[in-house]
Structures are given as structure tokens and as C-alpha cells.
Image 1 (tube, rainbow, N blue to C red):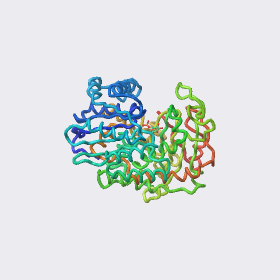
Image 2 (image 1 turned 120 degrees about the vertical axis):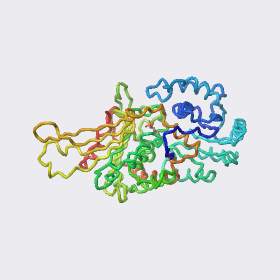
Image 3 (image 1 turned 90 degrees about the vertical axis):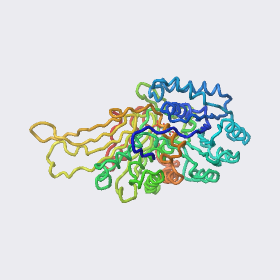
Image 4 (image 1 turned 180 degrees about the vertical axis):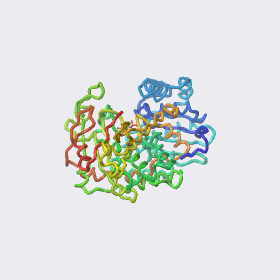
Length: 511
Ligand code: BG6
């Protein structure tokens, strides 16, 4: 990780050809291409930077530039406004899109890769040729593309030039398939060439967790089983499965969100301080804590998990259909669109502290947050005081869409009697920092180009994540109930019981 000694802006990445497999797909449109515009606006792309879009759809440079321009406008007009907020965006886009090229390819055909080699060579300037292959494609193509790139001689580092491959999630669909995928790609690539993406690691609020914990003297001494009662990690989404039914119905909320995104939040919250900011030091600590997640026997895994599936309802003002009526979803699907889990981490710091995780689609509000619930202060002094103990101290790391941190604590209500009431101190990023528009992918793409792997996952970290959720996948099979919950609610009531059993309750989500 770049630990800047001063606040001077980062320098442009080295010259590079970015080859995007799946250039006509959703990820490229919504996130990658807008992120490139943001990088161009921040002067972080080299003069020799070029994009080679690759997909099976017919097209040429002109049609690719045209389509990409339309994606940019759509994103700029959307509510989140991840691009298109800055002066000069139109001019920057014109200059950037002139560097966009396109090549039709069949991802499963060797000849296409021979042609790709010719296409890349044609884009090469005179300097060393750095090439970043971004696999923004369906997971079934990952290993085959790497094998064909290797066969076409495209992944061997050249003198002075790098060859790197970015692999999107989902990386495997369980422990066995993740291991098999690692084995296949590692036959052709060195670990240092592989950038396994989890875009949660690119979020500023996620990266800030390390700073909150380790750059402040006040938190870390309390950050352990002696002072923390439990931790809740929530990623509530308002969107349903949209047009992704075919993928999602085979995947479900657990595979889609837990071993990757939620475990990143868990790892950043629970890991030990790394020895340095070096990528390997940080990744090792993230891995180590995921490795310590206790593997639950089947009965326990069933008791400590709740699955839900959304039924028709309303999110904000929009009607949402029953999940089983969404396009490309099986009429009798048992796939979960909501999951809540109780996990424990078997290490010195966290023994006995439950971690409750939940994530779901079509929920009442969008809210991703980590809440750290501290133990109650000893009660003797205030045992007869009204209001004390109703709410324990809670530190909430708000990841999105609210970005900030809040601390809840007790204060004396003004008046002659001592009556306590919970109050809150809030920090909002936007009040202090003028954040540039961002899709979250800017840092990740830039880091691939400069070769910084801090925000990427190693083979081991991926495998530990799958290993930790495998007991739930195994225990579920056809067993246990998938509870219905109304779209626009906070999930199935069975999830409340999961905590109520331990005498606890979920924090209410949303503002
Ligand atoms: C993706 C999942 O990885 O992350 C999606 O496949 C999910 O189902 C998305 O909606 C959430 O990301 P974000 O950044 O919108 O919270």
C-alpha cells in the first residue's frame, strides 16, 4: 500500500495496454469504463495508455467508442453520479475514447488469441510493452482464457514489460472449485501476475478501517474480547436480482457476498496489526484471521444460519415481484436472497465474541455497516439510574451509502435527577474531504498498473474464505427452511431469533 509521506498527488501509472475481456458486458459498462474516465481526469493514466476491448459481439473501434460514450452518459445521469461531475469531463472523455480499440474474439477459440496477439502488438508503442488483461467475463471462462493467453505467448513477462491478469469474482463456487481454479491458472501464471479482485477492498471506507484502528490510540486497546460484546456486519441492498437471475439463482446470497465482500469487512475489522504497509504483510494478516473462523459441524451450521428469499413487496415506491417470478429464476427456487450467520473466530483476541453477518437483496434500505458493540460498563454505580443499560456503547463504521463513523454513548439528561440517555457522535467523510467521483474501481485498476497487490486477494485468502462458509453450504443441501420475507422489509424474522437466542438484537438499519 502506498503510505504517502506527504499529500502530493500520485503519479500516472506506467504505459499500459488494458485488454478488457467482456468489454460489452455489464461490469465494463457500469464500472470499468467510468473508472477509466475518472482516472484520466485525475491524470493517473500514462500518455501511452490504451484500451483494447474484446468481446464476441461484432464491432470495431468506432462502434466501441460510441457505445462506451453512451455508457458514460448513462452513468453520469444516474443518481450515484460516479462520473460526469467534473469540469472538463466531456473533453477528457474525447481524449480518452480516442485510445479505445476493439477486437471481436471467441473466448474459447485458440485462433482468436493468435489474432489478439497481433492486435496487441499493433497497439504497442516503441517502449516496453505492459499488458493488463482484465477478465470481466462469466467465471466459466476464467481458466480457459488464461490457458489460451498462455498458449498464444501472451502472459510471459517481456524484457522490461509486465503481463498481469485481473480476475473478477466469483472466484470458484465452493472450496473445491476455487482450489481447482487456482491450480489451473497457477500452471500458467506466477502468483505475482494474478490480481484477484474484490471491489469492497477498493472502497475508501473499507480502506479507512485500518486507519481508524491503527492510527488512533483510543480504539485498539479496547478492540478485543475483554471489551467487545459482539460485532454485527450488515450489507443490505435495495436492488433485487435485476437481470442477473441466471447467475444469481445458481449462486445465492451466501456465495455472492459472504466469502468475499463480507469477509473483507470481517478481516479488516478483526485482523491483527500488520508489521508494515507492505502488500504481503497486510494480506497475510487478512488471511490469518479468516483462517481462524471456526468450522462449524453440520448441526451447528444449520442452527447458526438463516436463509431468506424475497417475496413480492415494495422497496421505496417501487413494486418488487416475488423472487421466483424474476426473469431466469426457477419457479420453485430455494436459492437464498438473504442470509444471516453467526460466526466465531478462534484466536486469542476474539475467543467468545460472536460475529453476526447478514446480507440481503430487496431490503428496506441500502446500508453497509460494521457495528462494534462494547460491553456494558459495570452497573453498580448506576444500578438505580433510569436509562442506563438500555443501549451499550456502539461504534459504527458506516461503509455505504452513508460514509462515516458514529459512536453511541450514554450522557446525562439535563435536569435535577441523574437520568441517562444514549447520544451519538457522528463523523461524515463528506464534511471533511472533497471526494472525487468514484466507482470504487479506480484505485484497483491503478494498483494493477503499478503492481501494488495490497488490495487484492492471494490464493490462500480466497481458499480460507470458501473453507469458512463450506460448512453452511454442506449443511444446507436440501435441509432447513428458506424463509420468505417481504421485499422492502429488513429480512425474515428468523434472523431476529438468531440473535434473540443469545439475548441480543440486530441494530436497526438505515438512517
Ligand atoms: C457484487 C455482487 O459482487 O457486489 C452483487 O455480485 C452485489 O450481487 C454487489 O449487488 C454489491 O456491491 P456494492 O458495491 O454495490 O455494494
